Amino acid sequence: MAISRRDLLKGVASGGLLLASGISPVEAAMSNELPPQAVGILYDATLCIGCKACMVNCKQSNCQPGGALYREGMKSPPYESKGPKGNEGIWDAPQELSGKTLNIIKVYKNGTGENKDTAVNGYAFFKQQCLHCVTPACASVCPAGAFKKDPENGVVSYIEGKCIGCRYCQLACPFGVPRYEWDAAWPAVRKCQLCNHRYKEGKFSACAETCPTGATIFGKVRELREEARRRLALKPGTEYAFPIQTLASREKNRRPVAKYADGVYGLNEAGGTQNMMLSGISFELLGFSKDIRKSALPDLTWAYIAKIPWVFAGVFLGGTTIYKITHRGDKGDSHD
Ligand code: SF4
Ligand code: SF4
Ligand code: SF4
Image (cartoon, rainbow, N blue to C red; front, side, top):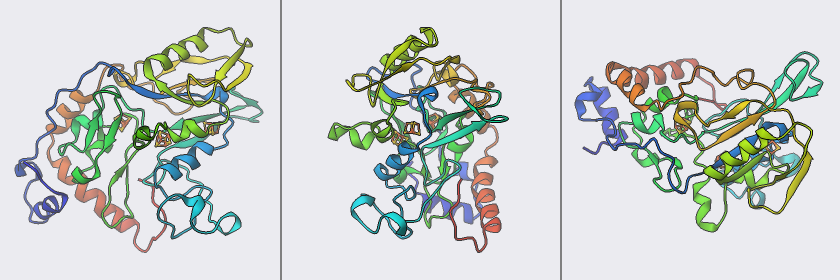
């Protein structure tokens, strides 16, 4: 049964139980296998210099306001050809993923913060965005089918027109990625779509395109996994030609290999993800939970949520009400 968000809101307002309206979880069987042409990103924190060029290009390529060239009131890209630039622009320095920030570079710092990629008295950068799970929990729990995993390239996309605003996806995602546009008149969920709108033009992820050091590269997941394992196997200090933008790129960043901590984040977490990370300090110190199960989560999450259907209405009404109360008179940016 097709149900629009407007229908849903009417149902809620009249006190009807949401699940009685015939909504059912997505039933399409999801594979635990990596799709044949799966694409993704390898982020190597030891190469990241924290320039945030990836964040700016992400915003420019995905119609999100904010970033160095954003000026209040501007609505659509390309920012560089519309409106004022330079000092007239208003800088936006997001601290978290939000409805307007799909990709964020954060900093870890300890003690004197002198040494890069060092846990004690050091610092490190790390990147957060949707990891494009092989078996995405967000798609599994969405009762409206608003999340779709491409069977060929494995990109997990969100389809705004289908979303009923229940925000189950936020509860289900083990990495805390999907954000809600609280300040929009008709809010939607936002998350990285791996720039899939750019592929038909022969382009790839905007963050990888603009990264000057090769810290973020785009490619086929199987090849990225091999590359990550290759780096881990190298002796620290060995000179290595790190590719820039994509694995096949002829442009390289030649430098000594750093000492990596842990393994490849994303090989097994939540059943595996198409975006992966390498780091010089442990992922736990960077705030990535060690408690995330190694197996796929979708069946587990739906089994849990389905037992408490009131969560469905409660999350929608409770969250919205609390937000309205806590943001009365607040016209600024909001981040969940
Ligand atoms: S990281 Fe979260 S939002 Fe992204 S595909 Fe996985 S479950 Fe979905
Ligand atoms: S893949 Fe695209 S949407 Fe995702 S973080 Fe990179 S630039 Fe942003
Ligand atoms: S563009 Fe590359 S080096 Fe700069 S912050 Fe992003 S990932 Fe790091």
